[in-house]
Length: 158
Image (cartoon, rainbow, N blue to C red; front, side, top):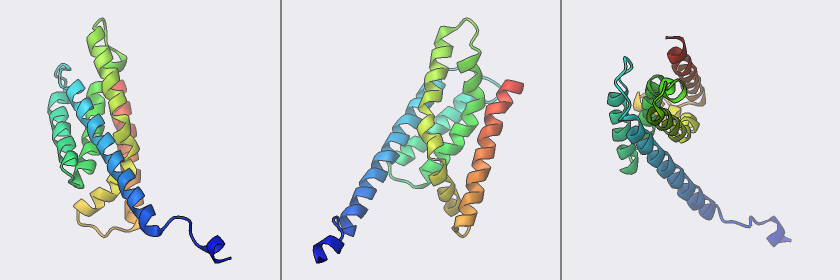
């Protein structure tokens, strides 16, 4: 009867599996952020300063490769700032197939960073020195979602 009630996997093993999964997710986010930065660099200069933001995204991805926790927050923020520069070229590229394909691939490479927005909001709370509570993290997450909606709408309107 005792072996039925005992957990089949030791808590330490579950913890190590979760750490391995988290490292793998972080590596995927860093690789995709670096790919998005490299794909966004050749796009033409716009009023949104796309190449400068892409260079910042490359630095943030490098920080994530180095294991810095603040790198995730910077990746998500720079991807949000890069959307107004890449989205018009991905959707409205007139005649230039290179800009269209590059913009689409860059937007596709940004998806893992956007999916990590919840983790990034918790990281931003720590970076700013605020007390990390569930309520504060939810507010930051809601703010990031609102910023991403604005970042997607602004280039379509302007």
